[in-house]
Image (cartoon, rainbow, N blue to C red; front, side, top):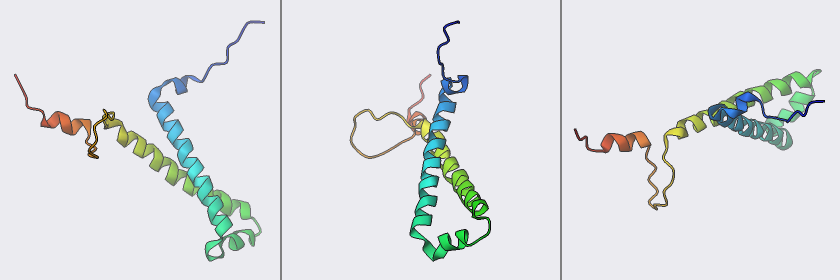
Amino acid sequence: MPNIKPTSPRLFRIPLFRLLAINLAIGACAAVLLVGGLLWLNPGHLRELIFADRTPGIALVLLLASFLITFGSAAMGSAIMAQGRKEDDGKRGGGSRLAVQEMAQRPRTR
């Protein structure tokens, strides 16, 4: 038998895809926690309404899917938008500026 090494899929070797997958997982965890919290807290008798139906699974799947899409895309979008920020170089000051803004303010020399 040949010695087969377990390798990660090729897509996870691409940094952008790995970033999106990690942030999608973070958004999915937040969605599952929120749906679980809604069912646990039962605001407006939501849990009772869902489980009083003949097929509560459909309502749960629709609720979870909508939260997954919302929180997953929000987490992925914020990760993409944060790509242009420079690394923190130890300066204190609280101002977060985009790298593009700093490049635009540099004087041009020819």
